[in-house]
Image (cartoon, rainbow over all chains, first blue to last red; front, side, top):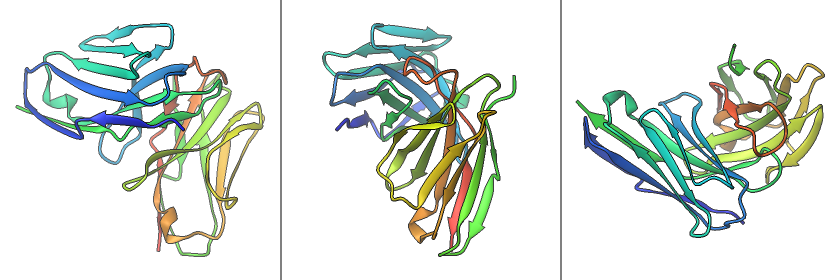
Length: 112
Length: 114
């Protein structure tokens, strides 16, 4: 059974810092990995999707990497801003269908 | 292009009642998945529909059911509500049913069972 863990559970940084969020999964036989952000009481916003054959994806200040063999993914946020404050979730697609197994999330607070 | 929409956004029900939640996917998307989010269990997969067929189901009791219509809109139903069913219910849509496609989530329906 796939289990997804995110470390740290919470992170507080001053504006402008570069930061790394970590995601680990127990079963390396994945199809893809997706990073989301969730604002309080809201739905999920997709940030990046990495296919199992890819090593990384980039979008603006965000860069996500994937190492299937070690069961890890990292989300790098450059030059953090207060608007980046949210909960970040990673989710793994294990099957050929649209079932995602979610991590526990990292709650990020960026202070001005 | 309009995003995934869910109705209603908020719902208060009493234990023992039943409830129906609705999800309209992004235009052109044929796959709809449902998730339950609670503080204790996090986000858990309920089921996925593609072309009106349920293709995958999570570990939830039979009180949770769903369906998809020919226009890809989907509904989920929870019968005999329990206090533990209080949660944020999220639906997600995707272009197709393969796992290589990105999922887009709606704003969710906040269900409170009293």
